Length: 76
Length: 325
Image (cartoon, rainbow over all chains, first blue to last red; front, side):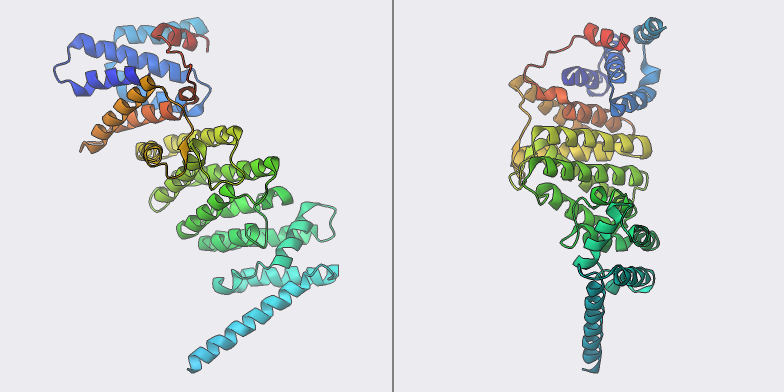
């Protein structure tokens, strides 16, 4: 998971020449990490995923939104 | 010279008063004398200056207080409860008195698990209301009890350590929104928990078992949760905690780091710290450092790093975890 976070960090802030596709990959990876945090029983992980999601919400791609929707669909 | 003589006379008078008060609570004293003793105790707490009031927790008094509070059947139980309430009231009015009260109830005259023995929340109330200077001294006192709980019996030692970790969590919950002078003290609480959660501290007698260390790690998570929930700048605390773990790991100041990490995980952790360091040096903290500190510290404290046989989850499997909410 740390490696994936490092990937996200590099794409969002590290490399100024990152392509749009790379940034959307990083956004999707971050959404999945946050979804996995949201599923943990620990309140800390859940609160954290909420806060982080709020900051990155504007960078979520269609694929990321689809991941979120598919979770809600399965729950219902 | 006359001022010195007056001071000396005053101190003698105080000493004599304390000896008399302690005498009222002697084991052989009647219930009536102990009742008088509680009246004097409460009057002193309500009216005396803190320099004198802080010395009032004599050994006979505290022993009697604990015995009478321990059971509703005791003849002076209600009086003892009133006395405990008077201590709490004094601390409410004068938060810096908490240090003397905590030392009095838990120190040599009292017991590290005062609240458990008396089935009350006296010490907890005192600790969460402590002022900054008092809290500093209380944190040191409680850290000492974690290291040396005063018993060699494993179950009793674990119970005391568990209780003190709960005191720490209650204090952080109560003060995490305060910020200011309390922030470094709350960090100090987290550093104490880190010391015993992640390192085989040789000063701990008896040594902390794995269950206690796991408990302390969960308490760190609870404290961080309070900061995320209540604090405007939780990232600073989170980063301080992770940095502390890292520094202690490098120096072995509190013993060997208990978490085994294979080379792959160590490399990932090293890279994460390099990123954190870059982020922390940037002028615009904004939200960036929040995100990465949180994510990194949560992973660092996560129990998953402990396992040498940790399986690397693929994105698909994490997605399916989430779908089973």
